[in-house]
Image (tube, rainbow, N blue to C red; front, side, top):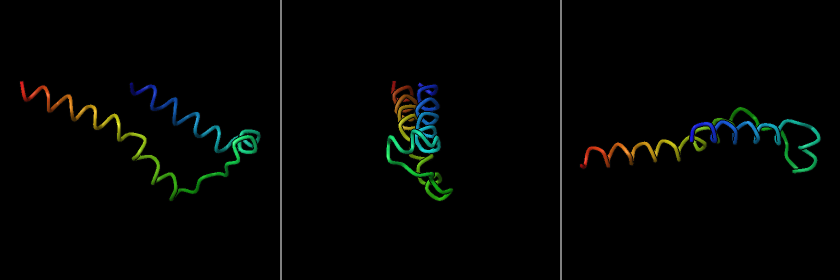
Length: 60
């Protein structure tokens, strides 16, 4: 599942920073502050799944 997170992040970066894709998707480069907001949200689903697995393992 982790590879999917990195692939998704890479594709997002391509859409945001490659000029031809910027025009096609009507995007602009993100500032550092915007990346700092986005990056924790990218990993949140993985963290929640792992926490649920840990909780389930301790419960049994």
